[in-house]
Image 1: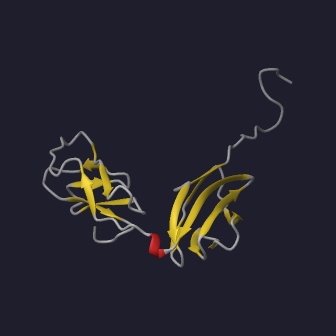
Image 2: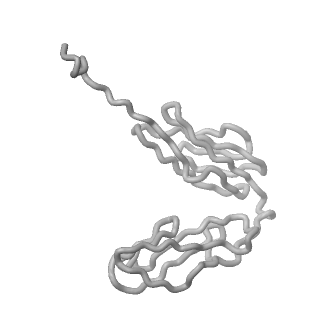
Image 3: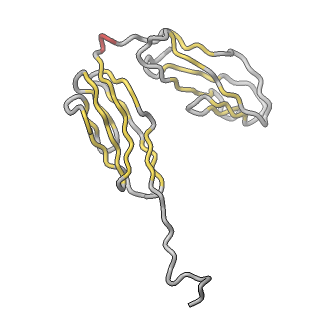
Length: 171
């Protein structure tokens, strides 16, 4: 054979990877938390399991975690030998420190159409139990906002972008 050409068909080596949307989380007993796995290199779905802390949480085959009793547990998603885990602390509803406000760095901004702007928001008080924030553009024909708070203008105009506490709805 020709030394410049391989013998037979070439089989590409595909690297499989998996990651979760959270690596740590707090959960109130009897409440649920949706974990999301991002898988690349395969079309297979991950299998979900509680790998430590049995009896503290349960997990469905879609990654929905339910707090059963107070303590700490690890939930793992595995696909083709690769895995990713999230350490979950289950707390009593009596131990929850509610968010009282969402603080934003700027309350009014102007963005050029070709630019983006990153919102910097934080939950108050600083010892609030749940610090996750969701972002929403009231008019997505003017601008969109990602789940991390990155604003991208779409057209000239004016709209509100809202940052809210996920753990304390209405804040």
